[in-house]
Every structure is written in C-alpha cells, then in structure tokens.
Length: 314
Ligand code: R5P
View 1: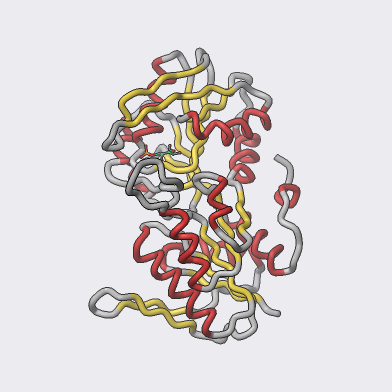
View 2: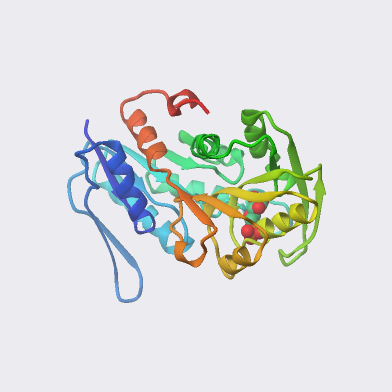
C-alpha cells in the first residue's frame, strides 16, 4: 500500500523537508486549499487517496483556520476512502487548557482531540505535547515524539563545558529538564513561577545554585517570551556565566522578539514545528524536526516500532 504525504498551510516548508528526508525521489502530494470570499476554507485532494496510507502534516498554529483546515483535510480523506489516515501535528495547539482547574472553563485539549478523531484521523504523530497525559485524550494511537532526540545530540556536539547545568522555568516542567540533566550527568535547578489572574508573572524564585554555571533552560512552549526572559534574567542576576534556552515550539506572539533581544538570554534554540520570523532576532537558532518526523512516518507506514532506540543514542 503506497504512502502519500500532504501538507496543510501551516506546515508547508517543514512538510517539504520531511518528504526530502523520507526519500530522495519522494515529493509532497497534491492538495489544494482555497478560501471562499467570506473566508470559509475549501480543500480538495488533487489525486486519489483510495486505499492509501496518508499522512497529513499540519501544526495547529495560528490556531483557528489551521485547525479547521486539518478537520476538513481529514474528512476529505475519510470520504475519499483512504485506508489509513494519520494526522501529523508537529505543534498541537489548544493544549494549555488540559483540565478543569476553575469553574466554567472548557477542557480545550480534550475537545480538539475529539474533533480530530471525529474528522477521520485514525492515528496522530505529534511532538512535545504540553503535558504527556493529552495522549490519553485520544482513543486512537498517538506517537508522542520528543525534541530531546534533536536537542541532546546537538548540545553534545556543540558544548563541551564542565559548568553545564539544566533548568526548568517552572516546577511543572521539571520532568523535561531531568531528562537532560540525566543525559549529561549534571545538576538541575528549578524556577518557581506564579502567575496573576490576567496571566502576568508576578513572582519567580530560583531553587538551586547557578553561580559560575552555563545554564540551559528546557521548555515546550515560548509564547509571549515572558517566562523565559524573566527566568534568564533571574539566573544571570544570581551569578550564572551564560544562559540559553531550548524550547520546542516557538509561538513567539506579541512583543516576544523584542523581549528576547532585550533580555539577558544569550541564545534561544527552537525547532521548526512553527515557522518563525527568524530575521527579527539574531539570538535564535532553529533546528529541524524533519528527520525525526520522516523516520516516524516511515516506521509507521511499514509497521515498525517507534522506540527511543531508532533515533540514535543521546
Ligand atoms: C508553561 O507551562 C509553559 O511550559 C511555558 O513556560 C509558557 O507557556 C510560556 O509562556 P510565555 O512565553 O507566554 O511566558
């Protein structure tokens, strides 16, 4: 059964690179995505998908139109008799409301999972969900990949320092940072963050010693950049030698670029799950997820296991 790979509007560049990594002679398959004059989206597969294994690559940021596009592509594939339909969602948006933590709020992540499944997906590949348990919001298989397969080898090649220390900019993210401190056999420090009612960070406290250390923050999302810039300034004010952040999904909304440029952050290393305006900051390095996604697609298509060993040693 042949494999066809399509892309939504949000992930065109990444999808082209994934296809190149998938195989030398493979090209992105043909889908047209247009808009009616009122803004409604119209999708049309430009080639047959009947009895094919199809992979649709679409990050859901910016969220609304890209989500609707994804739903429509999945529905079109289902109605065109595709055999297997995998939604490849490098960045899964609407993940931050993952529980009912106050009265009268939705569980947005669960709703999005329901809508993706109802639209026709029978499998999801994604990278660094905001919290691991979102996997369980889907009643279909989810291959949850980790950007640490990209970041850890990159760090090992580039930084050879005895003063390395990993950090999480909030206590909830400590599990992610522990993976790195274990891989490098280093210490871990935490920042305790409290947000006010309107989402502003009003308190940050450093837990641990960063004096004369090269600090590497690990996080899944950088949105307004408030968290990471404040945390970077905090560790530098506490005697760190340098501070970098490795963050999977660069949302970078509002004045994020300006904040990064003005902060004490030496470098922000992100992936390409979301396209960014790279020219707005020379502190940003982008690493591609193309190989990781291509390998995952290949293995799923041929029924092989996706385990941590396939992506090489960390
Ligand atoms: C928090 O739980 C996340 O891991 C990020 O730290 C947070 O979403 C980043 O948001 P911002 O860049 O707007 O401070």
